[in-house]
Length: 134
Image 1 (tube, rainbow, N blue to C red):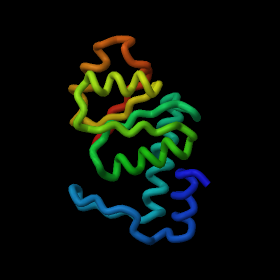
Image 2: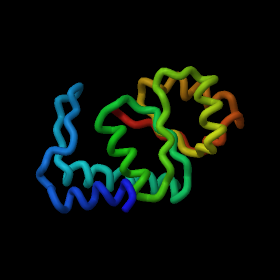
Image 3: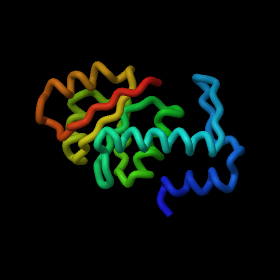
Image 4: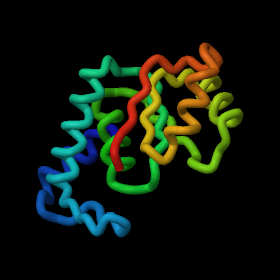
């Protein structure tokens, strides 16, 4: 069983049990709701050209969006590359290049550092940049 299957099985066994509580947004999601949200995100990733084996960088705040994106990438067989939100562009550039990350998912708080990374051209292997609301 992989991490994506874990959520699917848990949603089947305990659909109404609370899976996550987002303190900042005062939002609560059951395992079934989190699974549905992760499946939607997984389909959106597939629609963006992400496939099994792709390295997917996650530059997101700790919250629901991070969790559902983490599970979504796992469900399609992509490899999650969680990134420390306190790193500067030079440090992120090294990690992204070294890990072979080709997709970067980020929230609006990190748009400035991502714009700086994008302006550096081929110093990273990022081909797909996805900004999420959060």
